[in-house]
Length: 279
Image (cartoon, rainbow, N blue to C red):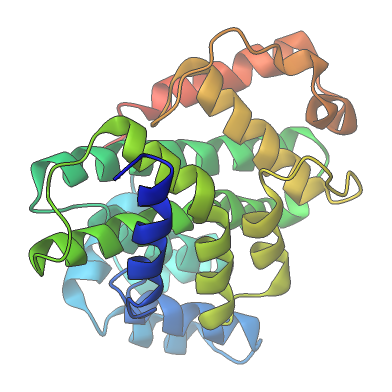
């Protein structure tokens, strides 16, 4: 079977896999729906967050990490909601559950998942920083979430491959070239399908759909930020791809965001620091 034929075969196999693979934690999805409906109280957010004590503990650990809160500490989910706001707490819930989801008993797949999480989490932190530095502080938390989930299609594909390997449908022997080809062909389509299935707001679905498009809407600053941070991650090798010769200053994204050399250098330094983030 040639490399040209195999991705199409894998695509058909993956298309038969359930959309409900363990990509999103049910509590995190419930919180996201509450926020999307604008129908919640602080107590309700705290109550839902505490439905899974393991997730709640991870959320508090993450909320108190330097990457999220600095010197301000919180002891309960309710206190976190009051101090941080519902959007940031829900972001933390999704981030905490995503961190846990990026794991596999298969050593080869686990290495891809860990690198993918490093990329997605770094991109989210970088996007939030850029939002604060590009006059978009008011929607920085939304931009964080868009960046966190921009490559969710890759996680879905890895989970689908894991399921097929466990079932003995496909071989556990695969190489970097094959995985990268599957990602290239499928991750945007599958990620967009996943986000729509779980009823994420259109602004997030659009970022997942368009973060690699050659023709994209430069008016969409959220998209511009996610695209730029994604490229910056690639430039420094944060994640699965490394393209060190890329000149970020010459990109349309940098032009749209009016970024200078100093801002890009600071962004790359932040991304480098994110490599060591632990939860």
